[in-house]
Image (cartoon, rainbow, N blue to C red; front, side, top):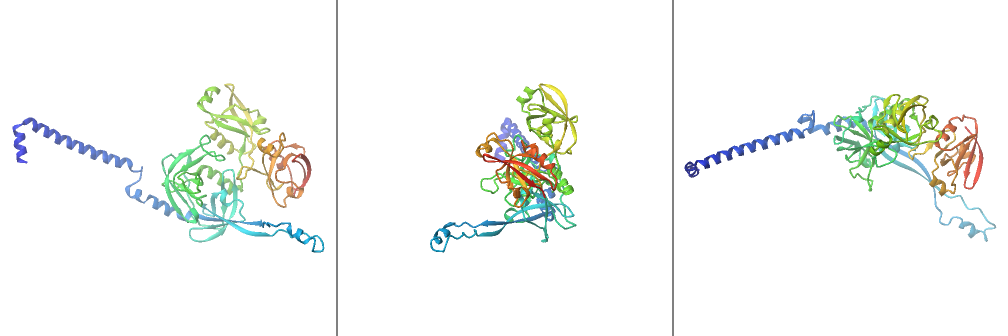
Length: 487
C-alpha cells in the first residue's frame, strides 16, 4: 500500500484518477443499492404489509374453509342388458317345443351414478351457489359441510348461465362476500377453492389471465368469463374464485384441456352475473329475463366506419315474430341507446335487456342508414334453456324442443319443413301418452304455426291445465295430427 502511495505521489495525475475511480465506485454502489431498494418496493403488493403478504393465502384458506361445501349428485339409471343371442331362443325351440314360444323380455340392471363437485354458502340460512352441471338431472343431492354435517339439498337451476342454487335446512352458516367483477383486472391474484378429484377444500393460486368477452371467448354459450391459471380440475366446478380479500370474483365452471386435467386455462362465471341469477333463484325459484329476439355483435373499426357509429351493438339478425321483429328492428341496425342510456357493446345490450322485466316497453335508439331514430319495443320473456341450449316447455307438454336447423332438416329428410325439433320426451308425460316421439318436428299447436322456438314457447304458454291441444307433427314423410290432453 505504501509503495502504491509513493508511486502516486510522484504522479499527481494518477492521484486524480484514483480519486475519481473511488467516487465512481461509490456512486455505482449507491445507485445499485437504490435501484435494488426501489425494485423491492415496486414488487410489494399495494396496501399490504410484509407480514400480511406472507400469510395472505393462509388467511384466505382459513377464512373460506367453512363456506366451501362438498356436493354429491346421484342419479338412478336402468340399463337394458344386451343379449347377443336375442331372438335365437325362438329359433331353437320352435321345432321341438310344441310350438313357437315368445322370447323372454330383455333383462334390466339398475345402477346409481355419482358425481361430485363444489359449492359455497351465500346465505347463512342454508343457500348454496354451485354450477348447474353439478346438480342438474340428479335424483338426490347431498351437501357436506366443512364440519362434517350432511344435508339433502333442494335444487333451483338456471342452465342458461350454468348456475344453480341448492337449499339445505340449516342456519347459522358462514356465508361468503362478493366482489364487483366489473373491477377485476388482468394480472391480479386469484385463488380457486374446491374439491378436485374429491380432495376436499383444495386451494390453488394463480392470476387472472384474461377477461373473455363474446368476441374472443373462444367457446359458445358463455358471453363472458374470467380466465385464470390457478389450477382447476374436475371437482372444482361450482367452487369460488376469490381475490386477496377473500371475496368471490367468480364461480369456477370450465377448463380448457385435452386430458381433463388442468392445463393452466380455467374459466369462472363473473360474480355480478352469479349474484343476478342467485337473487332470482332464491326469490322466485327461477330466472326471468327480458327478451328482444335479436343477435347483437360488437362494432369492429371497419363496421363502425361503414355504419357511421363509433359505439353500439350491431344487429346481426332478428328472430321472426320476436319483440324486435314486431317493433320493426332490422338486421344492420346499430342500437346505441336504451331509454336514453348509452349502449357501448353487444354484451352491455344483453345485460341491460335481461335485467328489465318482460312486458316493459323500452325505447331503443338505433342508427339505420346513418340516420338516428327511436323505436319503442315491448319486451318478451326470454325462453328457458337446458344446458345443451334446448328450450324447455315446462311441465305442460312434457317434452323438450330445439331449433330445426337446415342441416338437421336435411339429415332427417325434411328439407323445407318449418318447425321445431323434439329432442326428448318425458316418460309418461302428456306428449308421450299422445304418441309424440323424439325427432318429430312440431309444425303447429292448435291454430298457431310453429316457425321457431319463440313461437313454440308462446303457444305453450297459452295452454292451460285440462286443455286438449291439437298438435301437428312431421314424422319422416308423414304429417300427423295428434290430440294431447294436458294434466
